[in-house]
Length: 433
Image: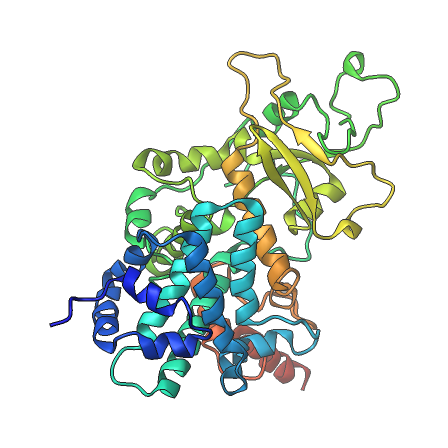
């Protein structure tokens, strides 16, 4: 009797293969059935993610698997109905395959080693479903395309939508109140963080003191800087305190007693945890609310810089402790005459003891990861019509919850961009006669 084949031996079999179809036909269906049965507890994902296979190899094969979405017969999976509705008027080239490529390439560019392996391993799990049962080669290929579409949609709904920028200007903040391969740490995440984020009474003043009332990227000085501290020729402008990560969509307190909302938040945090990395252990999760409400989650920025940062038009990529390169995706979002630093180093200039924490490297990495996926996928600005549908006075989705996005956008089968938008249009038609 032949010994059972391991993930490693299967990988060796596929080294010389050139397409997902060949990979599928080589893999023994009995082995894949075992994998499929184990998906209920994410053990397939864990087996792949913790295997001895190199991340480079997992990536090579994952990039081959998503090519199935280029096959014309499976175009409905690459650009499902909800995606077509969302982009029909603006010509945006937004597809499920581009979502995968953005997750892969974004992780590489930001240096997310954990995130890169997560994205690749999650893609591999779709292959497990594709060989479940005694499907034909064509049937297996279609299931692979379908599962990739489900995973990509889950990433959009639960990881992008909760942080999607709107057209409204971000405020100057003083105080602030479905796929297991997508969230392999779902159960742990839910048990480790169960508290919401409170307010920070002196947050804004502490950030001003920490940054010496100066925007570290433009050099503009806030009117709050005492006159005897102002350097000669200082350009004075109103500055705003910005969140590095907007936590309004991941506040458990705001979702209290709403099981679907808390589950959705856990899904979102599970994906962020897997992709951004550096979030392991009970101590970290117990301290996350404090991290989000502290000066670690704050930048002092000029108005246009704040708005551009909130829209992910630029981000900070770490090159050394507390030192970052400024990476632009859309420089047109700020005045062209601004003299903006290409590199910034954060220090606490308050002179107080114990002083105030500089922006968190983890939170800046979180923001940078989202910025790369939004722009590399083509999703940046895509959700504008959901926040502000044309001819409507309200949003097309009731909240930033990934669960609401799934219900009102993905699972809705009408002609409007969302279920709520259709209802709004119907009411308007009745009122206007």
